[in-house]
Image 1 (cartoon, rainbow, N blue to C red):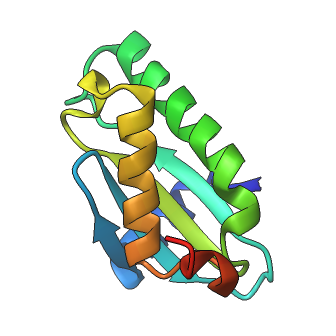
Image 2 (cartoon, helix red, strand yellow):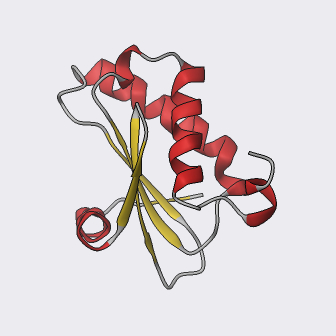
Length: 115
């Protein structure tokens, strides 16, 4: 799993890409020409102070680490936490992220049948 780091890449995904939302997360995605998927995380100050924001980011990163082999290659993906994500436990956050990714058709074909 490669990381999306540059602000210009985030802006490009927001402006030109599509999105899928669930209770705790919004997944923005845009095809890239790299053959590998890059993932970035965005947690607003509305979520809380830096300790809380970093906790949410760490949880999202851990979930994506587990899901990354099942994600289609060739996409830039930005995962944004919604207000309320700071109160969600790890399992609820994972379930929400899985649903949003599933709705965005970002799982590889054989895994989509099992959902």
